[in-house]
Image (cartoon, rainbow, N blue to C red; front, side, top):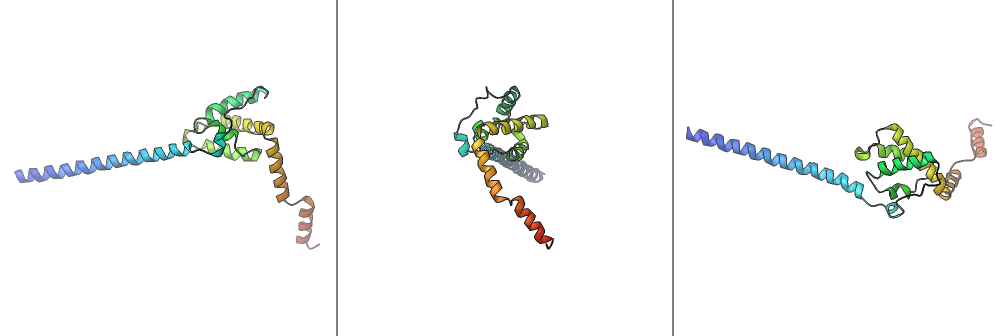
Length: 161
């Protein structure tokens, strides 16, 4: 009887030990995953080194309000400097970027109206502060895309004319 009790006790002890080791390992894994996500948001980009705020006092009231929303929401995950100094300038660049950010868990950007305010602010701000960059990007775009005349000639070739 004592032998059975001893074997049972040792078996029970092994089960508890194994369970404890697994629980500790799982907690460590979860902590490491959380740390990795935290490290990604703390990663420094070249744009983080520029100005971290914008003087919007000359902007329309609506854009001043949108700036406040941008400041609060976007600073949850990264520096404001990252967005302010980023190489994005064209409206079609900001929309997918903000949409991508809205999918991040910590972003707090689940409300489409908030996403729209931030996107509208970034588009407006770019049109004011990044005029040269917009002009450069549009010139590059135009140089890459065929002209209307080239399109017409291509269409004529396809039609055998």
